[in-house]
Image (cartoon, rainbow, N blue to C red; front, side):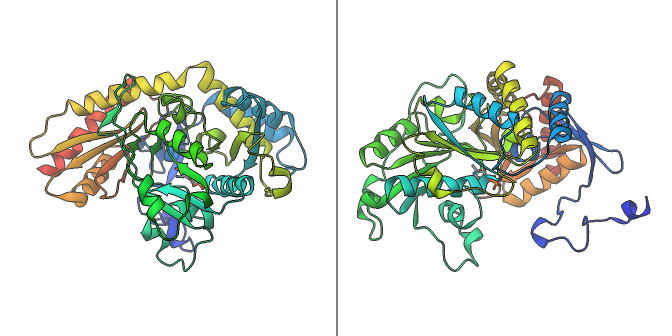
Length: 423
Ligand code: PMP
């Protein structure tokens, strides 16, 4: 109607500046790997809502699972159990690496990271946290303290948790499913020992992403997580894997920690779990989660029944359709096609793993050139976002179910956009 047509750059004049629509897209509806804007233009969505839509948009089985639960019982609060929550918990317990997992349901990723920090500090009686440069764990108090991004902290006068950010040894290049060699580095033990404000005997947890998402699709060097496991065990530090982005098949295995065969002390999950609805959780073995009852870490929408029903369906599909393997194959195929592009004046290097794929587009034009490429891709009907510390990384995090013809279209649009911007 008229109101719809009057919308221009912003969804609404009263919208928060933080979430202003600077891409300029207003979505009408979505299906599979695509969405359509209000003018009926189709876009290939290579963001999948920041890695949320493992199954693509509007999966029919997912919609049925959600709507059945919506009609049955939409919300009662965490105090009331429901079959969807019980079933999801059982399903997750089978996938998690401990014999006796305990789950702490939350709503957002940041909230689950807060939960993990609380659990770790309560379990160890220690205060400090170790994180990594380029890491992203959220923007709330504790999660922001572990997020090593100074621009996000500029106007924050005080953070509630002392966290130290260490160098993250990312693998050179994109890791294929076959990687066997180890190029891990472990040079920072000394740095912590010598830090004036940090003592290893006061560190409760080390929080790490197996592939840094917001940091620019950087995969940890193979073998490095095992070294972290040894290091943390030796010093009584809990190893917390933030698998909010990497979890549920995206990197080519159900969880990112499986690439290195480590068993973490806590795992944080979110994003893909709810199939587009907000649900997240902290998982750990009973011995680590033992203070969970006294922490009483709940919130109004924790373990929302509709989100749990969605989670049930998403996790079942990831397992039954072996979407981890599909993510590895599609990621490797995309990476190979990108690596084969030869465009004079442009150096394309790849990073990440599976369908957390980053393509660094290096020219004399710097980040502005990449910004223009991303905008041109949008004109060509393909949505990607930019990232990396220098803004030169094009992030590719499509649905795990990305069809082959859509993958081909993605590569073509990428190459065309670069050529158009060079011209
Ligand atoms: N950890 C990681 C690894 C993430 O990628 C994100 C979200 N990008 C978060 C935590 C925070 O999750 P949320 O945005 O749902 O609070």
